[in-house]
Amino acid sequence: MSHRPFPGRRSVLRGSLAASAALSLPTALGAAPAFARSGRPKAGWGVQAGDVTCDSGLVWVRSDRPARMIVETSATESFRNPCRWHGPLLGPGTDFTGTTPLRGLPSGEQIHYRVLLADPDDPRRTGEPVTGSFRTASAKRRDGVRFVWSGDLAGQGWGINPDLGGYRIYEAMGALDPDFFLCSGDNIYADGPLTETVALPGGRTWRNITTQEKAKVAETLAEFRGNFRYNLLDENLRAFNARVPSIIQWDDHEVTNNWYPGEILGDTRYTEKNVDVLASRARRAFSEYFPISTLRRPGGRVHRVQHHGPLLDVFVLDMRTYRNANSTDDQPTDPQGILGREQLEWLKRELSRSRAVWKVIASDMPIGLVVPDTGDGKPNIEAVAQGDPGRPLGRELQIAELLRFIKHRRITGTVWLTADVHYTSAQHYLPSKAAFTDFEPFWEFVSGPLNAGAFPANTLDGTFGPDRVFIKAPTTANVSPADGYQFFGEVDIDGGSGELTVRLREQDGTVLFTQVLQPGRVGQ
Image (tube, rainbow, N blue to C red):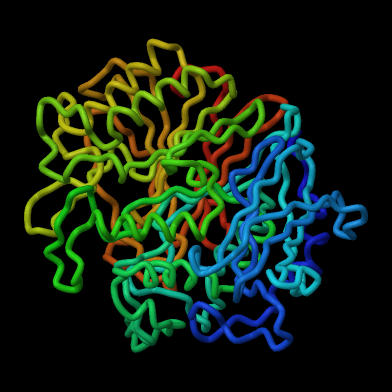
């Protein structure tokens, strides 16, 4: 393998991560946690880096009070001759969060950074620096790429369990020293309140760390913000964020289950019934709590393409913002579909422009798995497939258009990665088994959850000919993380051969399934 060996980044960061983790977190999630005895700003929620390219990245932090964000970067953790980046003023308008863009970075290098929070009235008064590190994408193909992906965190009533050591899956993902983490959505469960205890089979008890904002469904901006802060109470996640940059997308539970634009909720837990109002508040909190490049721009959006050197482009989709209403999904025409026309045209255009060996399509929902939405008692469809194995109907029409485009434009190396369904599987889509045949074969890999209920396998829709090559899923619904069935995936691209290897892993890192794909093939 020509990929860099697992480097000393873990050992290099050990001291700085320990210092970062030693910052005690508040017991309540108010606007100004009371852990700053010295009167200087503190960053007890850790740091994050995101949307890293060959020469740029974003660094995130949250302060406990108004502060000026300052980032220093260095080639070594000694921070001799650091570069200084002046960031934004952090205040209540962003829940004391802020992101600083770093540009002109060297490619393929380890970037050590530390965040200083300065008193706005006295810049000489700064809090204790919080450190992190990330590796920029390499402009040299021979260096290879390794990343991990998953989704679905703190769902179905299963939050941070101190008896199990919290979100331990992040420790296993970090041990692989990935170049980045792709989160496929459901970063929070805004519609999933937590209780202090949950009864488990066999007389066991699950314990949750709880907070005020997690006691009910999120409706206000403050409640959505509190849901994002909740996950940062976990030491494993904070340590992972400090060493692995992210590419973040969203799905339904950042707002509420199976939502679509224009929906009016019948859920009696909500006093605010207008989903568009809830989605606006959730989107604002989402943009405050993750370093996402496109959300910082006017009219910011979630969908984007992240260029990761000559081997990889990641096409991050948004299957929420532009979708039509959930329905039986069997209409013969569907111009809006699940992506919206503008996003579909954007995706086709960017795929045709890509010169990367591999083009990962980060889809927050699966393509050929039937995902129902029976929340209002109707047999509606939440994702793309509706169970009719015949010609494309409803949202399948957009996917057929995209697959046809990939085939006729001779676009090579497309691989679909997703989460959402709370188990892990691998599907190979084959025209020889499909009702719609005007496409080249491709793979779809499913992983997750990170820490949520696990569920039985969804049925397959034969329209695009999926062949389920591997699956691991429970036979009963909402199996707790205490009983396993928590998953993540790994993608390793060899810089010499260009081969892409997918490994589906359990929460402790155990490999369940491996698939090696060859470069240069249309579709894949």
